[in-house]
Image 1: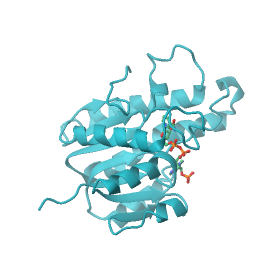
Image 2 (image 1 turned 45 degrees about the vertical axis):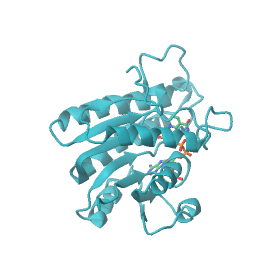
Image 3 (image 1 turned 90 degrees about the vertical axis):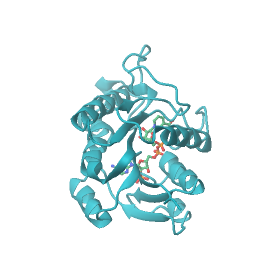
Image 4 (image 1 turned 180 degrees about the horizontal axis):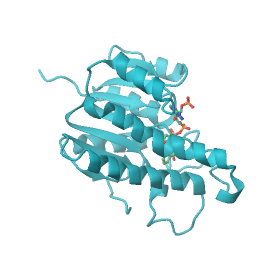
Length: 227
Ligand SMILES: NC(=O)c1ccc[n+]([C@@H]2O[C@H](COP(=O)([O-])OP(=O)(O)OC[C@H]3O[C@@H](n4cnc5c(N)ncnc54)[C@H](OP(=O)(O)O)[C@@H]3O)[C@@H](O)[C@H]2O)c1
């Protein structure tokens, strides 16, 4: 009998992370899911296939402690979902520097540092995934808007390409996923699609990625996006 695949989902207290955990469990995966503070919704998914851990990706000591707690366990999927959209509606010159800097750190710097800490914890043939956005595409930015958020996801894409280049030859692939515009706290009630639609699509893309190397930037339907 083959072992079920195992995922580490980072930022699973609500929204897309929580939806991914629920859908992966439903497909027979084992999941280690992280929250910053206790999430009743995540706790409600309790099964023996789910382990819940605590980490703030902006805190290197907390990331190191998580690595220590998880020991030598390796994952078929490490997916850094966590992100923020603080002051997304404001043009850059209206956003205080410290706020713009925090969006950049949480969305671009911390996911890559997390992946770096777990790069040797990925099963051969596995995937490191980052939650990007179509708004991270420089090519597709024809109408502006969402300035600090866009820039942070463009930086995430650039850092992920460098991360993949740095680790080329290691036995994992890297995915930058656009989940669609999804009805979550961040996406809002007017967004195009619901969480189950987005996560079902992303899981299909992820399962199709198993065993592939290199880096790809698709949306939740598998459509590649322009960088
Ligand atoms: N919704 C969309 O339409 C959409 C579109 C494109 C991309 N995305 C991306 O998808 C990801 C998830 O978005 P969402 O819509 O599910 O947003 P959400 O409902 O606002 O959830 C954000 C999640 O990130 C966690 N988080 C934030 N900062 C963190 C940190 N420093 N350390 C650990 N966890 C942290 C939050 O934890 P707490 O509960 O502790 O705050 C929460 O679990 C984000 O990266 C977002 O940029 C979303």
